[in-house]
Length: 153
Image (cartoon, rainbow, N blue to C red):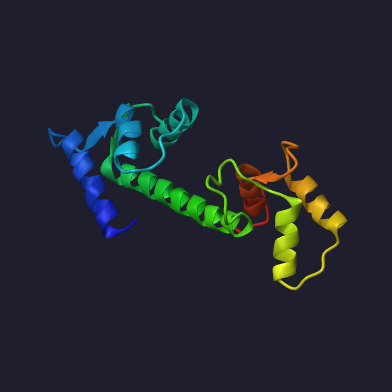
């Protein structure tokens, strides 16, 4: 986390902990994440976060635990952006990378650009392996899974 992000988190924490008791309710976690500009989690994800951050189910979280938790969320957001940037190398003209798909034509273009001759049947096989949803292309979720599975992210 940057210094500015820590300052912002401290301000948000202190605004919620007006009495200065040193903890805030875990029920405020989704609001804090949203206030910090991070993606709002699904209900399921939020429940998982809360059980991880408050394993004793006290309903409270102190600043140091919150800071560690938010630091992980910032890291996830940064990683997602890096993966998005890598995806856009394959789909540079995509308006919305979340709904775009890497196709055979994209792999052919990259292959040619790199000066590599990879037969179309090998490129199709790459797509088939990565395309879990069998959509005929590699969407962002497929791409993310492959990048994480191969250890690139």
